[in-house]
Image (cartoon, rainbow, N blue to C red):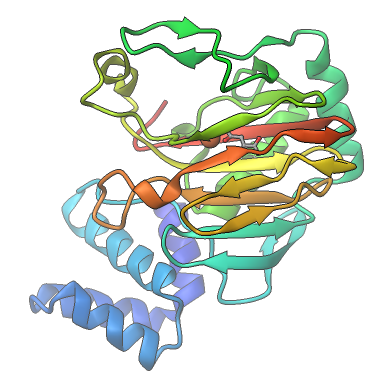
Length: 279
Ligand SMILES: O=C(O)CCC(=O)C(=O)O
Ligand SMILES: [Fe+2]
């Protein structure tokens, strides 16, 4: 929690942090505080919400938090890499990023994961994995910290999304051949579907997602957000981050997304799902 708050304080300045703390202690409404932060502090709404939530959780140990990418500048400086902010959307909070991974890191992930790949599954309504015509990629799940390279990347992602490494699942590596796709879906678990209810486990909801592109794709293979009319083109080393829950913590239907069919070439991605609690 400390590191996350430090990042936020950096993003919003100690003065504004103190102002939020004071407002919360005086019982100001969150809406009114967001308005002031956006108008006078010139913060994006996403940063304002995240800063208020982080301050709240520091005070009450509540868990009303979601990851966020600070798009108030055009670059994000992580300890080992300067990330480009290319595009951002407010709701759901989407950030398209460049230069997240080096070419060498992309190549190494593909080389390492390729051998272990098998046909991807989805979760059946009654629980368990199933082969699904709506998801025709091949993939492999990796352990958190499975390689030094992965540890390094996971630390970088934690910095970018302001979310602790421990609250992330292992990376999932996917390969889509020509025609392969992942039809639009939600990454959040649906508590009303028996097969999904058990997925919450002790780590809770999948609150955010980062899809990293490991190669350039000749045609097709974009990440599509049908509710936003947005499609992110795969670019080697780039990534798209998005939140799966609203600022209030409920499943976000605008986060509907999918991997469009690859038309020509092959598409490799690495997906990091961010969980509510320690995974
Ligand atoms: O392949 C893509 O572009 C999207 C992948 C995805 O939605 C996921 O892994 O959950
Ligand atoms: Fe997804």
